[in-house]
Figure 1 (cartoon, one colour):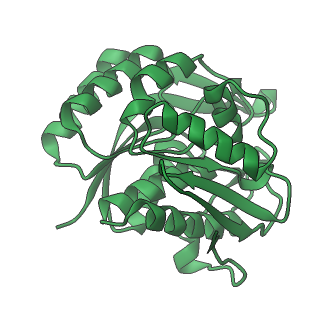
Figure 2: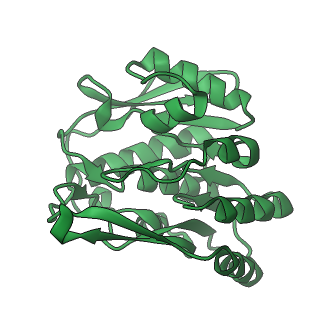
Length: 274
């Protein structure tokens, strides 16, 4: 049987992030992917390539979800940028109805766009408790927990524990390029143990789509039968290769190259656990 995954996310026309990134990553895992679009992200070249975000009407999001869930028996649902309160509530209702594994990338901040919509309280109440895996970055983890900036692995562990207490089964706090040091570090807390995943940073570029792709890779791993720690480790390796081979574009933030682990592997990438 071919595994199937549904992403509920925004469309980033640059191709590096959002549902385009999710679908590319699903393909890399041999997973059949479909998408429900929550918003469309465009860029204004006359204004420093700042983002313009247009939300899809909630009833249209609702129809997309009803259609996709009627057509396919999914193995996992992943969500990214939800954009609006109504769209987030529509998704929460569907998740409660079907009990599928759910990977939640709680997009609260978009590179270059600042805070989009204040969804923190809605996320904590309605979506965090439904998450099989939640994957906040440093800023999102700080926002969800109401804490100051996270600047260390110890801060990440504390935030992961706090988010787990909100109901998420597994919490992965992403350090990525923004955490100081030679390693790109992510922390997994499953309610009992902490696992720290690390790779050497291969460059210091900001890369669009790394977070989206990491979450969708975890989702694809779960869909194909991997346990959470193995899904996280493989996702980290896959995304690290994509970051190493990221391509330049006019925005100044590179686009992650999804098939890099297969087509352009970087010799120095190894994932360690501790």
